[in-house]
Length: 66
Ligand SMILES: [Zn+2]
Image (cartoon, rainbow, N blue to C red; front, side):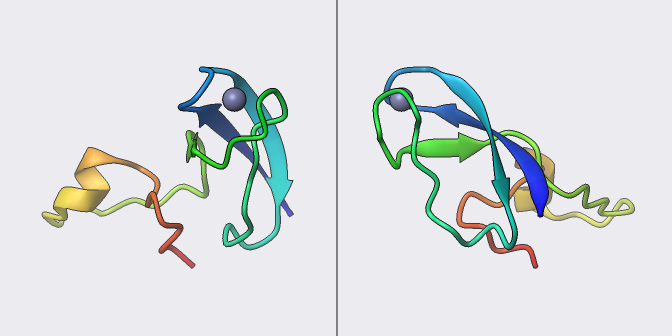
């Protein structure tokens, strides 16, 4: 289980949630919205490789990192 930090795009609340795989649906505790962004995740270093997605965001919005 890894503690992730999320930001709700609906109401702006930030909250932490324990998730095991990152594939689970996370809901905002305040407004029950599924429209949340993950702020922190397992660190993935690109080592200088040009990866636009990795550079633009440390976390894949769809939880593509495994
Ligand atoms: Zn919310």
